[in-house]
Length: 413
Image 1: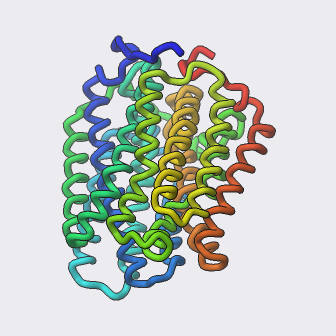
Image 2: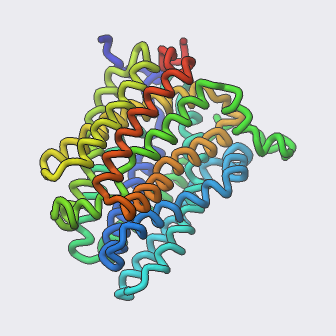
Image 3: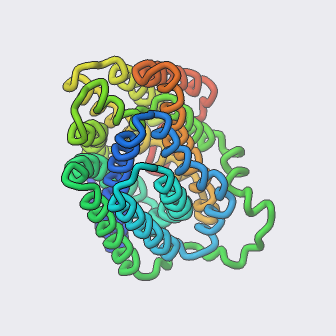
């Protein structure tokens, strides 16, 4: 296979200083979110001992992007994307401070956490489309695939270190975990401000706001079946196959590994994802991207099913590692196709819709997992969900031949 070496400024995203600052900021905020996530999950389950509350965590964070989708995407296309990121990260820092104050109060009622998480959901609802749309403005078109692989690798690295650190820090004290998260988000704000202006962004401020402009992202996705197939594939595959929300149940009741073990379980998918991201950053995917996408979505479902049925700690961790590696391939292909296929003038609105679909698959998937686990148990909820993901990969490959036959990720075909 030909090496995917990014040797020139046209193809190497790391040779663009603004992108490097952006990349580090993404790493800081992703690390902080993972620390907060593992800490909140353990704290809520420790107080309530009810998996349904873990489902509520996902639902509360999903609703803001869903309810605000028409304005968050338009804001990313109409206003300064960098400043939107800086403002939202500041609000995220305030949420970390709120969680810090909550745990210092030695709570017995988890209701305040859901209010904080709702505000965090609003902040990320505005930040994610702006962040996703900003990245292609920081590098040439030829370097977009490299930039996406690096961004995803940094994000997955945070998925490895963040949960482990979160488990260890929360084991020391909840206030230590939330304090570190607060410091990381503050660092991200500083880096985004230090980035300075981004003249590459297209000026859309003079575009008249109409009903059509608000729905432009939806219209584009409906018209472009390749994009529709890629986004909806992620929605249903992860909606059914998501197991992360139930990891506190596995850590406490099934595998009995405690908060430190929960950190290891949360980190395991990131280990596989980063290993795969390193491979993709060097070699890329040269051809038959669509077929490879569906194979790895099916593998994600299979390894989810293995994890759900496992009672062995090594097997469970191994399955989670392979889940992460499989998911990394599908994320890399989907996101690259989406960014290459979408014009800059609607990129924010398309990314806002994409983020709602991602949120539906992740946060709403957590709600599905929590509610189903309460009805039939965590093992059945996870393993049946993995089988469902395999089914989604099969049917989507038949229903979206445009996606299945997609070949190259370098913008040439």
